[in-house]
Image (tube, rainbow, N blue to C red):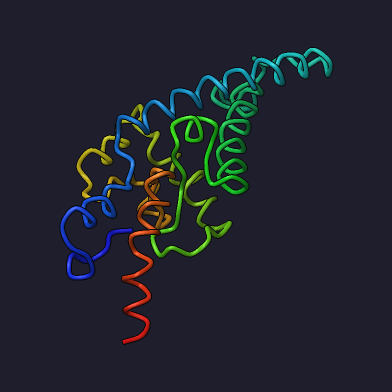
Length: 176
């Protein structure tokens, strides 16, 4: 959330507006999530296929629709949707001290989470994940998936500091 400069002054404004996580830290979190997802696939997919007698390379219509690709996609999207819905962060984000919040400071809705983590990640992942670079150029450090769902990724520790700094300002504004 970005607060107008008229509400706070000087260093407090810098602290309040610096809660947004940038590209680098989000990339590290995404790489950690990639390791987690790869591990989940190794733990779940191969043993399950062996148990059920599936040939993971078999497909319907085109090789793109192989059992392995479909199951891998489900694991990928379910991981992001469920982790964000229940914890507001994936394991990678937790490790980096980040979380996903709504831009209007209200609790995340399930529709926001699905839009961000399913539709938004699908679009952002198009063209070899190049669309994630939007985060570098957006003043609020939002990717396409964030903009579609009205969310932002923030540093959890700085959010607590921001809330403490904003409490007197918000209290003063409510009495006016």
